[in-house]
Image (cartoon, rainbow over all chains, first blue to last red):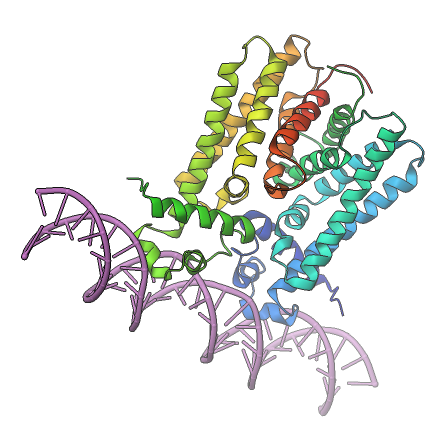
Length: 196
Length: 196
DNA sequence: GCACACTCCTAACGATCGTTAGGTAGGACA
DNA sequence: TGTCCTACCTAACGATCGTTAGGAGTGTGC
């Protein structure tokens, strides 16, 4: 059963910040507890294990990305690969900037999950990347994108997108909207047919 | 004084692999020792502390990137921003693919350094990124690149480049040369003047 | 033959790790 | 008023952490 109480969500929130700032392995259960002004052992009234905290953060973030991609694809005409890729990029930027700590934990700390979960997250990441890749393949097939290696291009774009989580901070020079606009532009142009 | 003996370099090598695979914080001194078939305490005949191992890996990798960028810039005409950016991208890919473990440790684990070192690495990373940014600024100024935010564009390209370290494995489908060619192409086109 | 590095050993240190056991205060509900 | 539930506490568990102390074997240069 998944705990969904208010205190449980607070735990995920402070844990996201700490895991983002110091990494999962370098963050102790007592660190998380201290941020909530309780004792380390008291956390276990809400949580079965430290890994469960990581899991709930990662699982939640993965679902956010998946649902955002679902909406992005549903909202665009399936015929236009350019529009679809733009929508995927924009959706990704929105999820990352809406919760950069959680997103960066998802991107960088999921390898600390133990085995059935770790593999499952890997599969979900592969499936998510495949949406970008197949969209690029579609665009190449109809001549909307230049002929290139779709797997490399998808990885290029996705790693750039995931990097946002590591440097974005709310209230900085760049608003999420501005970042989304720029990243859509950069991604689409990287696949453009015209030469330099 | 910096140890440079053969055994010392072996330590950096196996530590790079372990730090890459599991992260610095989740890798114990005894893990490193086990990979060398010695006892954990025996490592301290070669190393002053665990952090010193991380430091020597990070410092070495940083120097590799800096020197490669030096050569890339020295080899190209300073007048042509497009050519210079291409050389920077190519050099970066070469360094990453030549030693992906060390590179990925540099990219993802430097935050575990303690304070004077951590800040110093941050400064060096900023300086490195500035080379990309100013090259893009130059290109925009002369109309070789489209008018865009050079800082965003530099970050976009650099995070994509750094991502290579997380997925590249020697002997895989893609050779370093092929990756370099594709990444140069993707980076340059992302800044191209022509529309989609 | 002797000194000296170099490399590794066993044993142990105090600290901290994730986690469990058992208990208590306060509010909700009968 | 009595009972349960939630949220926290203190105390402690065995394991593991980075690191130090002190010693031993092996090979090289004089």
